[in-house]
Image (cartoon, rainbow, N blue to C red; front, side, top):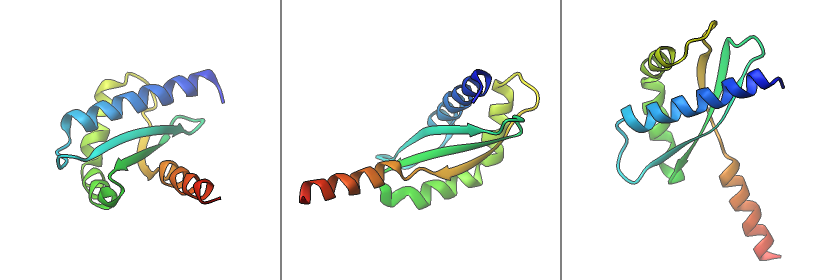
Length: 109
């Protein structure tokens, strides 16, 4: 992966995390983390991986984020001064949940 794509991924990750934390109305006690961004080589699409704590609130939070995706995209477009502007898509990041399951298995052994 080129260094440009890595820089764009980091820029998008930081910007979207800021937008979600500043602008989104989420219930108290819910933490949303933008864990990773994968941008396509042509910079047209970006998959944004999010993690939610507690896990049982993930469905509700994802619905809120999906409802506000055009707002988030608009805010991101204002922050980024690049062409083309990547179209974002939110994806579940289950890494923490899977790591917790593996850790539990190790403890049982």
